Image (cartoon, rainbow, N blue to C red; front, side):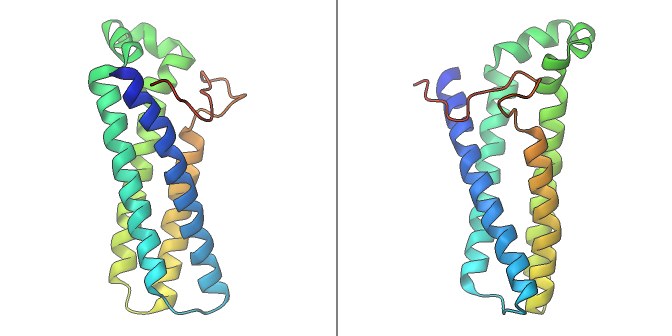
Length: 156
């Protein structure tokens, strides 16, 4: 069960990253081109928020129920905090993703409430860019010190 959820969480990250980049690029292009807000903009925002929600739920299931590393770390939290790799997974990854999820939801609400297209694009650019920064900082990229994971995991 753990490997299934870990694989889904790993693969869903790409939907989050790709949709987030698309939403941010469309927002900045909308600002630069003084373009109206179109249905495609709304669809990409909805899919980005949906992918973040799915990713977060998968991550919570891993964190709370399935991760053997988290379960071991909880037995001696003090020792876990002294280990940079374990601390990354136990605290830093989760904290950054909660921040990113909050930014995505606040950004989505601000986009929906904005009356004019430029306001929608501006809100999308600000909140979704900040969310992507948090996401990129929290992903364990190859070559990074915090127990890097493969870019594509298929462990079914």
